[in-house]
Image 1 (cartoon, rainbow, N blue to C red):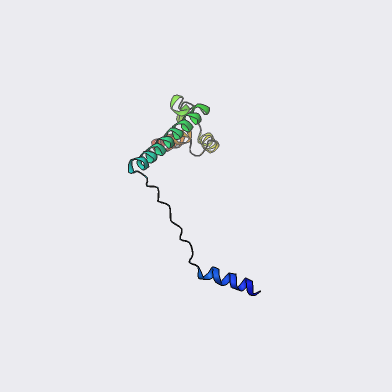
Image 2: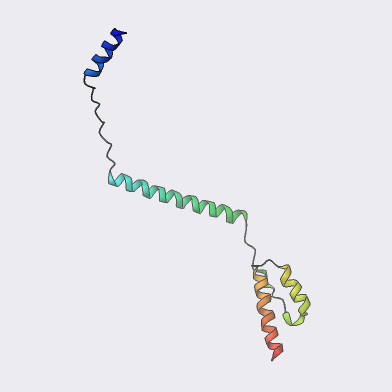
Length: 110
């Protein structure tokens, strides 16, 4: 036991070895800027590519309401209401029918 205490005491008295910190790697300013520019360019290319894939996968349909507008004067009001309710809320046809019905009701009121 005394031998262990003696070895521990010697170790504690000896100075701890100093560890040198390695030099930090200095990044060059132009290299850092080039990395940022390349990252931005890669993001742009990925965005354009994904957009092209989505457009290619879902071709746009023509605006059916603009090509074949329904004549509101010939349609009865009950049918107009049913037609409007059957269309998707944000569709161009629904907007056109609502606007046409409103204009038609103003004309009939006068």
